[in-house]
Image (cartoon, rainbow, N blue to C red; front, side, top):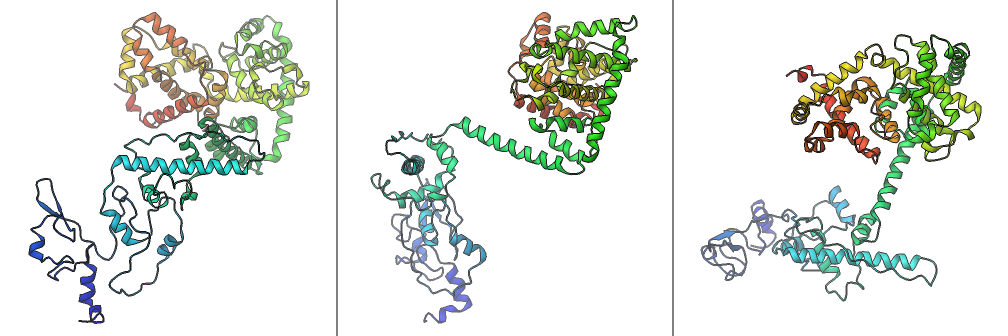
Length: 557
């Protein structure tokens, strides 16, 4: 039968059953001249076609028979490229129109491709690699690439007197990590020997990620890399804030979503004023609103502040005057101008809110607003020790008015914390106790066993909104999220306190004495905390809120 006759449907179906060695099923004999019956009885070493393999008990098993397509690509089985030229097919096959994906595949150069020829893949599949060979070759590929990159940099660098830097050996890849196994086939074709590795370049190494290669080669500083990525992320977030704030009407809901993960320092003042409800969303109305509010505040000072020495108000003013020097940061608060500003803000608020009046703890809530708003006019990075005397008087007046109104908006939502007997704080501490008993019963029982009451440490957490427990920079970051959350300073703060307590689980369980437990809970080691610690705390608090906020039965025992 000639080859034209083999193009019948039945003959084409038989050709698709062609095995690796060229045998046709049903032909009776393989390419090695063995019959079908003899083929089942011989071992791999005696059968020329190599279809049979032996189990450990010498029982033969048949290798998979593939059709016209090559077997699935398995990086663990692909070893060396045995041929550099494609094999000419023995049986003519009708040419097929190249699909879009095949065109893309043939025109794309990928550093991790092992080859483009189907027969080469079939040949590679017949061999299995030793793990040591894989790792050694992968490391050699990375090392050669790092050396070429280093030489390329030195050639481009100006100045003939510049000395080349010593190349660092790439770290060994762990034996369990097989992500680089696929590049072994490249190393055998491009680098057949160690001596030729420098002269023969890798054909597809150009598409390796540059940053990842440098990191593996040990020639870059990870901290510098991380800081550059972080700065790019911050710049991107800052652009998103600026675009959102530049519109004629700011979308406050979108602004809250964007602010939940933190607000960039340059746009924090305007964002806080918008989120607190002090400024309107419409850009055209903001200047008139600021002017009216500032004028209204200084009218209050003119009308009320002189009464601070009256018998009816002198106790209130005296307590304010005593509490302000106890605030932090001392370097900022103890400046005479700042002290006067804080005294006026707190006294005016107490006079205008007779239901609560002034209560210790309210004074701490002024600091974050004042620090954030004064940052617009101070170039000094460390605001805690900033010299306010250099700020113009009219700017200080505006900052004082803005601070007063934003603090008033905050206190409007938690005023029951500061009315008689402070029922808001009492209720929140009780809710915290019940919540912790559901979250971590072991910690709750440990505190009960040593007779530590939640009021003894959590009262201050609610009264000062954790300002005495974390540094000021962390409080500012915390308030970014509080102002983004609905009822952030009241409801969400409860879950933050629960997450904050459970955060010290290990240290709490190690303490076996009432005094030591209480001292630890009142002096938690948070002096070195930063934005990352606060972000983790807020994430855990959000998880707790999601699980418990709308499920009151979780509180019941």
